[in-house]
Length: 278
Image 1 (cartoon, rainbow, N blue to C red):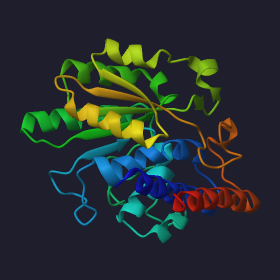
Image 2 (cartoon, one colour):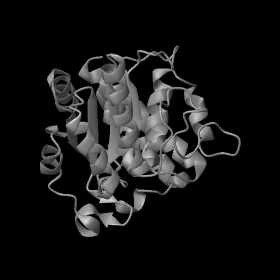
Image 3 (cartoon, helix red, strand yellow):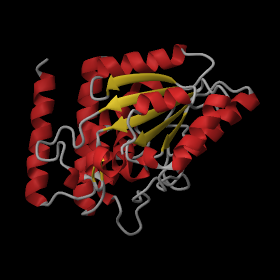
Image 4 (cartoon, one colour):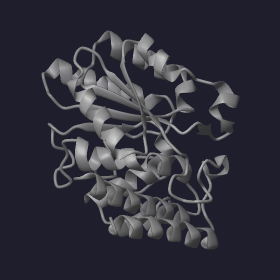
């Protein structure tokens, strides 16, 4: 996909996020929207995957360590063809396979159940070690929240990843600077994030995580990095794409009402129309 196609797809992913959370009357739109460009790049450009064969042995793996942003993952999976986009409206509904957090047993394309913060990266490290032990060449990607990296388990996993020189592992931190209780700097600052990962023997790349040129360059650099895992620190805007949600901590875990939903979709329609004129 070229940059314009990726931008258009990411905008559709954002529409799916807002629609799903509105329909559920619950969920986490802020961090799903901030990471929408990352989800889009992974599933439409970076990863070796096949929606027709979601369990193929040689596929690349993705673990959503910040599992509460499942609406973002689900919307990307739906756009990629793993299941119907229409099903996003069943998010969190009784009987729906699209639960509030990713479930590997019921959702096509989900490689690891997640939601308990800090644990996803540990699973990803295990997958990457497994590939090394088996001589497989699949790559493993995991997305963490910047609030999530306050969890000690994240650094235990990182220590092992650096020690085992897991150059088949890419850790992405969605650095939108907001967590459920407020700015991460006021809750329990993890800064400097880059220096911490460097101390655990990671190759670190810091980017604007809402800019596809920078995203593309970072993942290409990660592929070329040998002998150590890569951490991509993606500086993003929480609630990206929806005017009243951007950089507002209250939209970490709240659903838009009908009027807010209409405004949000109008915002995204405008973005889509502008992209179509390029």
